[in-house]
Length: 365
Image (tube, rainbow, N blue to C red):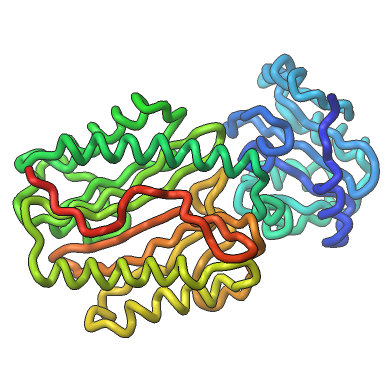
């Protein structure tokens, strides 16, 4: 079975280049159906606006490449020979003058190798158009996301049930990791966050091996499983033993912002409008000085991908888009609260793919 390159060829025509190039990563895997590593060996798939694709493949990957069903020209190279001759052969075969690449993924040394092979080759950043093909999820992709989320939520439930005062943040994180894999995760979507007390006010905190959780602490857990090549991204904030009046008020404010995000979302809304609605709830509270992040980001094969849910981004969200709705408030030196759901945009509204409760939870521990 040959690869269906039609939508990438269409992208090349739409942005006015002779071809687009993919390197190992989410777009590459989406097309070929097999994950390949990105390492010191350049690996390149070039799709012309019209015509047959070509690939530059490390020799040691040839037998794996056979599984892809690729019917274009293949130029391989061995470590001991170097890859410059393969790049020269590739560009000579293609005879193109302009090439769009994944600006957030292609590494500089691959760019340089292309320019050495063909000095007059115009290379442009086609990231937005290339990765934009992933904004609308297929039914299969949505099912993969649901599977990753289900694994994550089971792991979260088990982890919170085992939390006790005196545990370190690192111990809680380790329990979460074990539970993720026990529940069927193929990998992490990203390094998890388990942050308590003042550490929860750092949006991208690292678990501390020497901080033992105390009664009254906020415990913020941000994590996700990877399943069938797709990512979950969930945050819940709970309180240990008891929650202060301030903590309850902050939590209620963040929860109202989160729910507002669900309410306003439907096909045709812009990322700006969602963030404006969500952040507006936080700004109207007495905790407005604790806002430190945008509302969210797209979710799929990558844990952060387009569209980015923030003011100033007027990208329209079509049905089938999946994004994170994750408002938060963070008081440096005290505590933070974030509530994050994974949201599917529909023609008439939205569906929360995450189902773990968002009501305030105080653990008896």
